[in-house]
Image (cartoon, rainbow, N blue to C red; front, side):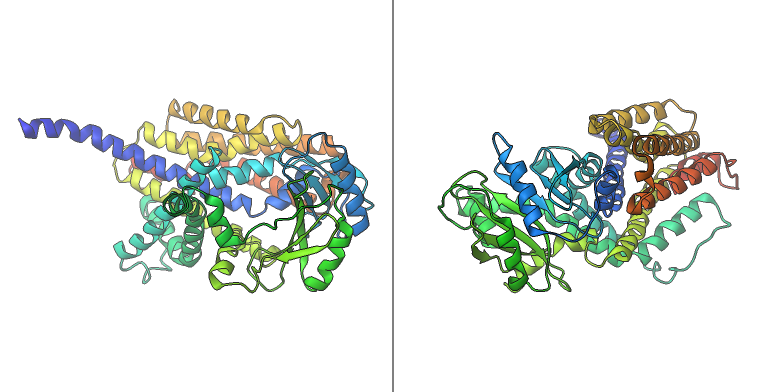
Length: 488
């Protein structure tokens, strides 16, 4: 009797196990793909507003005029206001709060509205999956920890993986080709993948550890933990006035002669305890920045000591740049994108192989294909809504992805889903570029904006060409072909 009851649970448990595997694979794929795109989030932000005036030099007096004009016009300033200085990827100056902002001309005048909705859609998908921030970051962190385990267990489970590092059986069955592709990319990129997994696990993991530690030792006061790790904010009282940004900015040349100012935050804006904090990038260092604080009159208060503080403090403050590849210029970013695409393929091909080993093709294969190709298609559909119409792109992305997954469920097979979604993605990108040129005219062909548009055009042409290719047939069983030939 007991065995009969137990056997009755086997099939539902196995099905639940399979769907859990698909869910985890989808989670890793979404994080890997969005993380690869997020490497160029500054370039994408520049692409979102091509009408803004590009320049690299900063006139401190102009920056102060532009910021204080915007600050003075605010009815109720937020606690944190931002002044972003020009960079190589985003050569313009911007003032912003947590809701909106605008670019400044080189002379400090008001430029066009600062739009970064689409770049935030991508980074938000990578950092917290557009879930409530704390919940989403912990989920992404857990995925990073899972990836660490997969990398280590993969090497242990395949003792010949290093010996076969250059073995690629291109003339064999789909299954063997997918297995070789998965294993080869896994070996070649394993140091990078492990670094990405560990640093990715840090962000949400740190939040969780901090919450537990604060609850146990500080009665839930997380500010105490933040002060220990990053230093306490200065406690000052002064007359409320407009910040003297130019005076503070010019002192940075003495405080950090080789540093490059990234941005300034006005903390506690409009109060007696307000202060300016400048984030200054240090050349040749992996830390995100060294930070310098000034009062509203531009008098120096303190530096945070990230560049020469305790080793643990420097390591913690280096995780961001190491994870996103923002430490060595354009070619490091390109390398990160190539390796990130490799990790994305590995995450997809692993599920492909698992699906094929079941020996049958069913709705699970079609749904997986719909998610793999539906996710970039949903991103492409949300781009014109945000970049051209400035609408609710996150909702368009979420609803589009849901609709594409449902539609894939009712297709004939996974290969049909793949081809149709590839063609649709290429067509949407062509339409996006056409609308972009009509909306922005000659600005669509300038500098870094042109580079992004050329990449999109080449990608669109490649997808349209691939979607029209006849399906390859080989000696592998049909059920296994449909499960394997999905994403790579």
